[in-house]
Structure formats: C-alpha cells, structure tokens
Image (cartoon, rainbow, N blue to C red; front, side, top):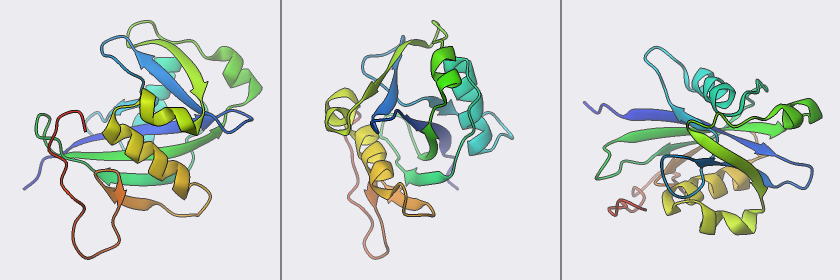
Length: 161
C-alpha cells in the first residue's frame, strides 16, 4: 500500500490578481505558503497552521482548488493539496511577518513570472490551480496535469520536475 507524504498550501492574491509566494531560507527558489501534514491533521488544518507559522497571520483557508498525485523518484509518493486563500485583507497584509526561520521574505508575483520562480512541478500545480479557480469544486491532477480518466498522465522522473 502506498504511504504518500501529504502536503497542503494556499494561494493568496493581491488586488491585481498576483500570487503571494514565499522565499524559503533552506533552499533556492520560491514556494507557496504551506507544508507537510502532521499526524491526524487534515489538509485544510495544515494549510492554516503553516500560514500562521510562516507568515504570522490567520486568514481563512478557502476551497480546495487542486489535489495533485505527484510522486518523485528522490522523495517518494506525494499527495499535494492547494487551497484558495483569496485576497488578503488589509489587516492581514500589514501583519504578514516572515518567521525568519523557514521563510525569509514574501512578495506578490504575476502569473507570467511563476514558471521562472517555481520549480517545474510546483509551477504546473499552481498554474493548474489558477486555471481552475472560480470554476467550483476541485480538480484532480497527476504531476500537475489535469487527469480526466483514460491513460494516466506522463510520469515525471527527474528530481527537479
């Protein structure tokens, strides 16, 4: 039986529709706020906890946008959830404080910048979530690609993909 690692993240937006990304201290590149679930924790609880830990804010975690089955040869089976956090309130934006341990800074970025800022597998997942946003319900992905039955999505075998 599969024993997947499960993680959850949240997409937050500014008035212009740009996506909030965080800069981890422990690796190159940018990420979305989020992280791995603790035992007994639901994906939405994890997303809310991680946002509070990383950015010191407690905004509501909105609906699920995508669930992505994305095993990685170097890291094993993964199931990754991305929730819609909507637009942060003025108070939350003013209160954002990176923890300085895991996250050094944060910034909003245009959709056109995401592929150059995020690793490919995360970029595919975030872009799919953006495309699905506002359509209702959640979309199922495999390796960041929509799967609607039939043949499974192409397996990605490179560690950075």
